[in-house]
Every structure is written in structure tokens, then in C-alpha cells.
Amino acid sequence: MCPVKAKLLCLTLAILFLSAFLLVSGGPAGAKDDAPPKDQAAQNGQSADKALFEKRCSKCHGLDKVTAKKETPEAWNATVQKMAAKWFSGISAEEAKAIAAYLAKTQGK
Ligand code: HEC
Image (cartoon, rainbow, N blue to C red; front, side, top):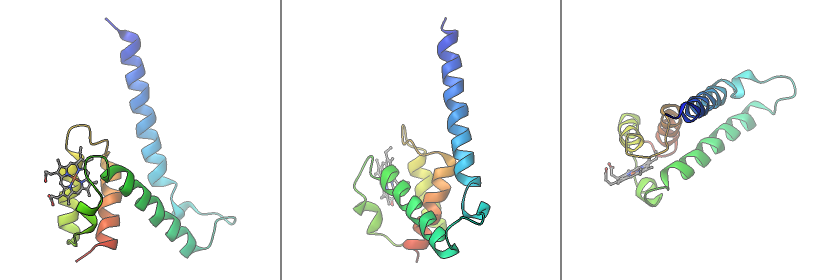
């Protein structure tokens, strides 16, 4: 009944997918001459992950629920996957990967 709506949904999904792809592929690895020094780039990557973590993981509960813990990379991956799978978590598969890696690095066991 609403072909326009379906098209819009498709477009939105395509844009989301594209930006997730750009986020992943456009990282420090693609650095050129005018790019900041490596360690600064790494820090920027880390703070982007931090911002993503703080945004996505504070939606349903406090960040303290997360920051109080230290887990193995496997356990973080499992927890983040579990959270991402919740209704309206707003966490994409790519974001879940980035957040799990960030947590494994900053709150590893
Ligand atoms: C859609 C809502 C929602 C979002 C978004 C969300 N959580 Fe949760 N989280 C919950 C609920 C509900 C619980 C308590 C029930 C449970 O454990 O599943 C919980 C519990 C937890 C717990 C304690 C229980 C356990 O399994 O260890 C941790 C740690 C946690 N969340 C981490 C995170 C992280 C990290 C993120 C971001 C990637 C996140 N959450 C995003 C809803 C959410």
C-alpha cells in the first residue's frame, strides 16, 4: 500500500550500511601525508570507540554497569552481542564489534 515508505526504508538502510562501511574502511589505515602522526590517529580511533560505547551503552542503563567490570575479550564480545540483540538497542553488528574490542582493550582481564 505504501511503496514510497518501503523505498524510504530501503534508502535509509542503504545509507546506514554505507556509513558503517565508511566508518570501518575510512580508519587510520587509509592515512595520507596530511594525516596526523600514528599514535595520535590511534588515540582518535580509541576516542571514537569510547564515544560510541558511551552513546550506545548508556541508552538503557548506566555506564557504571559496564565500567565496573573486567572481562576477557570473549566475555565482552558475548555481552555486547547480547545487548545488541535486545529490542531497539540501536547497536549495529559493526558497532558491536568496535565496542567489544574497545572494552576488551580498556577493561580486559
Ligand atoms: C536495549 C537496551 C540496552 C542497551 C542498548 C544496552 N544494554 Fe546492557 N543491559 C540491558 C538490560 C535490560 C540488562 C539487564 C538484563 C540482562 O542482563 O540482559 C543489561 C545488563 C547489562 C550488563 C550486566 C549483565 C551482564 O550480562 O553482564 C552489562 C555488563 C551490560 N548490560 C553491558 C552493556 C553494554 C557494554 C552495552 C553497549 C554495547 C549495553 N549494555 C547496551 C539493556 C541494554
